[in-house]
Length: 429
Image (cartoon, rainbow, N blue to C red; front, side, top):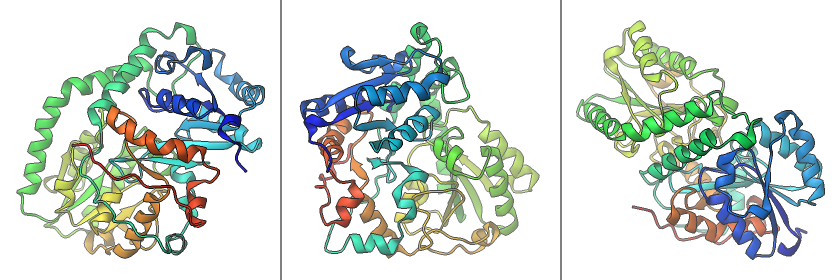
C-alpha cells in the first residue's frame, strides 16, 4: 500500500520552465506530504519559492550519483518527481530511486498535444508502459467505459508563455549562476547561446508569422497533392534518445530521397517546422540543398511552426521520426510513417511500408483502433492543462495532485476498473 499523504516525502528535480513545480509542491504540502527540491542552477532556484525546502546542488556533477543516493536515504524519500527521464541527472536519480523501490513521477509534454500534459510513473516516451501495451489490451482495460472524445485542438498550447519562461530561465542562469559554478547544461549549447536563441525567437515572432502565412498560402492555394513531414527539435530528447538518426540532416536526406524515388511527379512534400524551432540546426538550408540534389526543389516546401490543422486537413499523408504531432494526423485518419520509438507506434495505425512505397500509395490507419488507443491515453496518462499559462496550470493541478497521491498508477487503476475522474476539457482560446 502507498503511504498516507502525511507519510509521503517527495524529492523534486528539474521541472518545466516556470512556476509549475513550485505550485505543485504547495498542494502536496497542503495534503500533508513533505517536499524538497534539488536545484542545479539559478533558474531552478528562482522558480522555487520555499527556501527552507530548497537544496542547492553546487558540487561537481561527477559527485551527483553519490549525492542523490545520500539525499534519498537521509530524507527517507518515498517519491521522486521530475520532468523528462532521459537527461543524465534524471536518469541517474531514477536508477537510484528504483534500487530503493521508490515511486518515480515523470512529467512530459502531452502525447495528445496541445492541451494535455503527460503524467506517468516510471518513465515516459520510449520508456512509457504504453510502448509495451497493445491495442487489444487497451480495449480490454476500457471495457464498460464510455467517453465523448474531444477533437484534437489546432493550437500547440501556450506558445508565448513557453518561450517567455524559457528565456527568463536562461537569463537567470546566465547572469546569476555564480553559486553554481559546476553547473553544466544537458544540451550542447551554452546557457548564453540558449538565451540568445530564446531572445531572438521572441524578437522575430512577427516576421516568422508573416513568413509562415505566406508559405502556408502557397501550399493551400497550389492545388497539388502533398505529403506533410512533421519536424522536431534536433536537441529534443524524443528525437535524440528514441530515434535512429544522429542529426536532423540525416533524417532530411532519407526523407527527400524516398520522396524523389517514390512519390508521383505531381505530388509535393511540405516540411512543417516544430513551433519552437530556433535555427540552431540549419534545417531550411539543408532541405533546399538536398532537394536540389535530387531534382525536386520545385516540389518541396518549408513552413515555420504555427497551427497544424490548415495543413493536416488537406495532406495526403504524414511522415515523422516520432513527433507527438503525429497524433493529430492519426486522429484525422491520415496514413502515417514513423521512424523512431513512439507511444503511438502500433501496427494498427502506423505504416510499415518502405518509404518510397509509402509516398507512392500510403496505407491508411485503422481509425477504430486509433480511437480506442486515444481513449486509453485520455483515461490514464493525459491530463487536461498546461505547464506554462496560469489558467492551464490551474486545470492541471486540480487533477494531477490526486493522481500522484493515489496508491495506483493510472494504468493500473484503469485495468482495475478505478480510473481517475476526468476533468471536463475547457480549451484555452
